[in-house]
Image (cartoon, helix red, strand yellow):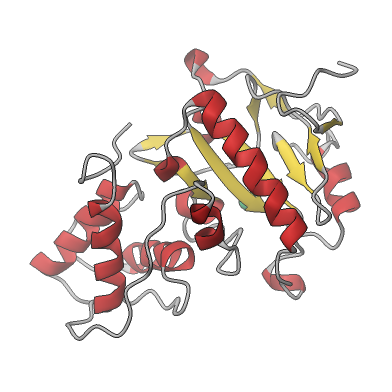
Length: 257
Ligand SMILES: [Zn+2]
């Protein structure tokens, strides 16, 4: 394929060969945000279009705000890999993926420039309107692949996006007294925490035991929703933030697709 008309008006097109059909004719109803984790935007753009890489995204947003579309929205890009949300795996089949140029945690992790975030907001708004994607289904890669991925990371300005109507976010709770739940503990409160995380969409087993995988999911939750402290310990502020998020959902409960 030599090219296609961009789905997002104003995007440049550079076709990636790394895509296929969405499974069972699924349509996108979630948005997954990533960072590139490479030294330069140009390098990331080439990598995502290189047949050898076997990865891609629908869009790449450069630091200066330039947007490149690589895969048509109707097709299945290869951005999310193994993971799940709301009990469904094959995230690539039900999502649109946006790669945001940033070298990431292992290369200095600079702040995301304002011009880039403005472009991300405009792109997300356009996609969410055209596909009727609910705010609570604008996700971090780390949300759908906890433990395996940490992008776009705790510096990503979710609160700024939310002010513009992109994503679901509440002011994180702070300085609340209460019991802490941590790895090694078990019981009803752990089970409640796991139930709330699963209700929100995270892939966590409701076992009543705070095991290593529960800690990893709590870390992913903190990275997105309570970035002041990412330690995998469900302190009172973490639990309260999760409660507020669930209460703020349209149905007041959870986001089952
Ligand atoms: Zn990613």
